Length: 96
Image 1 (cartoon, rainbow, N blue to C red):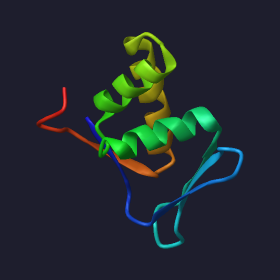
Image 2: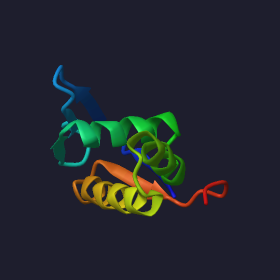
Image 3: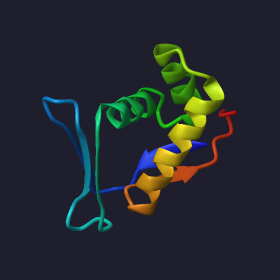
């Protein structure tokens, strides 16, 4: 699965590491704010062009956590962003 921001979404990370994802006025109505863990998830997804499996593997290695648990947490977080209308998911032929 690949996750991409919907068109019209802007992202800001403040000095304390808090991420804010906001839909522009012409985009879908949504706003999402999260702490440094969510910020790390966002960065990992963007570094891997939205490839959820690759992002989860990276985070699992960095955090020394069980890969399955990390993937489950990432999937839940992505669903929250999707429910807010800020990201879209698509199958990926190259993704596991």
